[in-house]
Image (cartoon, rainbow, N blue to C red; front, side):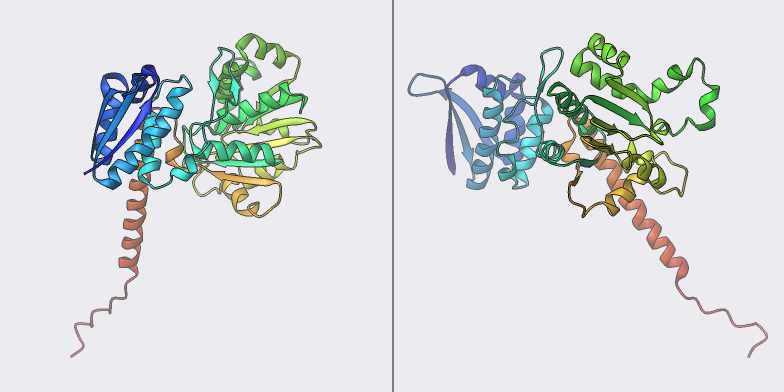
Length: 348
């Protein structure tokens, strides 16, 4: 039997670590097969969190609690996603990657909410955007690809690093169908661009955002509008890039002008292109992977920061797709197996 004690000098921090009705405590005990309980610190200041169990379980549980304590000390409530993420990283033996991942407040939204990197993947993505002129962020839904890109664009605008923000998406279903939608052109394309508006409103407030859009400091438009332009001194984001064709992606990337930065985001598992059409994002990841000043970051299901079920849904679909691919390969193999023809009944 092994034991460890972690001293917490603020009972409010202890409450955050344990969670509502000790729910975080129960998850830690279950994951690491340990017993955790709280006693008053012998010095009379704060609490002493005791961990008991086998040596490996106690070591891992104490590491997880130390990281939870660090976040809780900053005054933040621990979300289910944060707890699950830290437990998962410790369980996978990746604690070294957690060092400093949540240290800095990156941005404060219009409502005063601080934005920080919630996963190691998000931190690496942000660092790539800072260091490179072009960044491709690829990964599943809910990893913050678009949201963090918009945040970095607003930061660059406020710091006068760029003079405008340009946000664009391919309207895959637009084409000829766009003309049948009601309203003027802007009302027809707005549904495709709504997620970008939502992110901007969160960062800047709706009123300030609309004022900048009217001044053309912020431009939100379909990808088709980028053709023939040279975009100087701009922070440009292409969202839902998995729905571009290789030709569209080449067209977009070659719009890059002096003093500009491009961030391309997309999820290769959610392509809406016609069957058999290759994704421009997939091509770009392959073609541009060894070019200086171009960063490529691939998020994993560990980086999902939406509802905790989103991560489980993504994992379930990935498992299903892998199993289906195996069955398809086996079926193809069985059909291609050589079978000698039956002898003609007349042959003896």
